[in-house]
Length: 92
Image 1 (cartoon, rainbow, N blue to C red):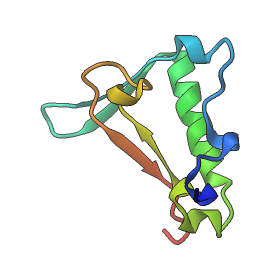
Image 2 (cartoon, helix red, strand yellow):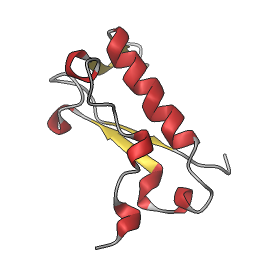
Image 3 (cartoon, rainbow, N blue to C red):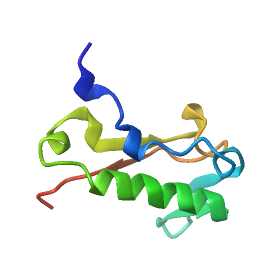
């Protein structure tokens, strides 16, 4: 098993009191813009995911650990959400 493909525990959503109540929905507006809608806990989870990705080492950024999927089929977004991939690119 390639351990580089496993998600980093530092950037996984916390499984405490907040995680059970968080809600995120990703939608496309009629204008074509993408909107991320969340309750307080959902936006905190999203911020923690982004923060965790930003702390990856340059070496980890070259592996499959450099991104995080948000989608309804992964049970981390509300039903009907667009799929979203958040990816860390240290060279951007």
